[in-house]
Structures are given as C-alpha cells and as structure tokens.
Image (tube, rainbow, N blue to C red; front, side, top):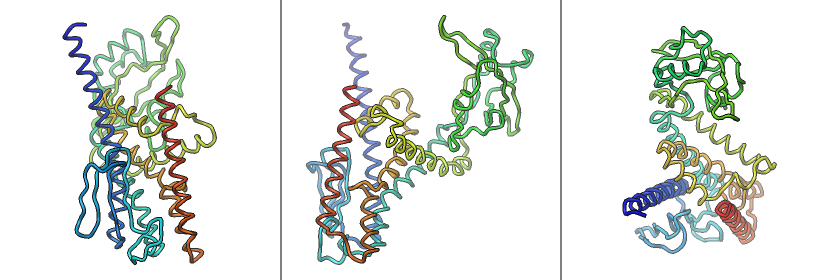
Length: 367
C-alpha cells in the first residue's frame, strides 16, 4: 500500500470518526434538552434540585452552586438526569419532590417531553426552510429532455418534452397533495402507478398552477430488471419562512405519530428486532447517513426529538409516563403508594430497559 493510499485511508477513518462524534453530540443534545425541561419547570415551581447531570458514570467535571445544586458532566455520554430531592424516598424538606402538590409534580414530569416536542418543532422549521423535505423541485430540465428523448420516456406528446421547466415545484399527483404530514410522499404516490399508467402532475410555476401529463415508461436497467421511470431529476423544495412556520408543527405531529405506529407494530409483531436499535445503533445510523449528505442529519434532529417525547410519555416503569401514573394514583387515593415499592418498580423498569437497549444494540452489531 502506497503512502498516498495510507493517507487516504486515514482521512476516511478520521472523517467517519468525526461523524460518529457529531451523531453522539446530537443524541446527547436531545437528552440534555429533555432533562433541562425537567430542570426549568422544577426551578419555576420551587422544587429542590440536587444535581443536573449530562451523561452517566464517573463525574469528569462537577461544580456546586451556592444553593447546593450540583452541575456535572459524566464519563458515559449516553444519557443524563435531573435529580430532585425526595424523588424516590421520603424527605422532610417541603420543597422535596414528593412533598409538592401532585399537579405541580405532573407539570415537572411533563417538562422533559414538552421541551423535546418544542425542540422538534424548531428543528422541523429549520429543516423545512434550510433543506426542504417532502416537496420535489424539478432541476436540470435540459438534461432531462435529452434523457426523455433517448429512452422515449414520460411525455404523451413528444412535441411537449419541455413541459417541465427548471424550478417547477411538484405539488400534486392526480389531485393528491404531496405531503409527509398526510403520508402522501412523492415516492409513495408515484409507486402506485404501473408501467404505461398515465397520470396528471400539478406544478407550481412562477406562482401559477400548471398541469403536466406523464406516462410511467419501462426502462431496462439490466437484462433482467425492468423498472418504471419518469425521466425527471428533482431536489427537495426549500419552504419559504411562512410555509415552514405553517407546516413545522403538523410535521412534528406526523413524526410523533410515526413513532407511535412503529411502537404498535413492534408490539403486534409487525416489525422485528432488526428494525430497532438503542443509542449505539442510532449513533451509527446517524453517522452513516450524515456522511452521505449533511442534510440527512437535519432530518434526524426533529425525528429523534419527537421520538424521545413520545417514548418518555409511555407508562413504562422508570420513564416519565409511569411516574405520572403513580402521581395520578396518589392524587386520586389521597395517599401515595409505598415509596420503597415505587422505587423498586422504577429501578426494575430501568434495569429491564437498559438490558433491552443493550441487547438490541449488541444484536445489531453482531448482525
């Protein structure tokens, strides 16, 4: 191997490592936002906070404030926590977690989910206005016309091969709006048509609506493979400020809904272990896709934030959703479930959750 090859290999490894670090920072940012939500609402409602930590394990940096709160950065950058006084045990301090009114405790427990969801909305806005997402925009139209001529593709009227123009924004396929929010993505709508099917495309051109009629035409990519093609190249349309402002919230809800659908399919057996992963798998996938195109990272940002919001509201022991359930039971019964029992339930849930996460990560790494 030449020195030049060694240098290229080293740079490739270094680049990959850089994207892994970037993905790790993104994941840690999402978790920190979640815990900061708990911290913010806790401070607002007068809860006593013992420690705010970024990461798990041994502390590599720690600073104690005058009010007794400890801020720390820990060795394992795969989590974090906001530790309230009297959260899992009895505490005589009136500002301890379990001594506060149940309504206030529920607000604090919802703080992490709220901040994750708000951050998902902000990330969705940045994605739409900076890179676009689900609306295709036609580009390199002149080259496409030659491509259409060569393979006799797409247009019904050969005299109108320039029906598409550079900058055309494809809005509808046969009258159906293209939108991730409704599940009608461009690729999904087009995949409904077979070879020789004819359909209408509504485009936005210079602020006006135009209609183009297309025909799905067969194209042999090899001797054995025949695929349907349209003969057009597209990039994602970047939303205007007000369009992004209008759609960032619905897009976030749509992403959250996809998480719920995935969880339902996981429970019912619709997806397998190969389709899920823990933090290590998430970091690996983010690094891989970000290395292909940095825009992919901005797709992950709102999706992971929405994912954390939905996941943490589930009534699984150790997660915010289960803690809210215990507070609601206490509110209704006018007395809490034994704190020790509740603590063991959350600890057991945490152990099982960590074991499952480690298992799926190891399973994916081996696979």
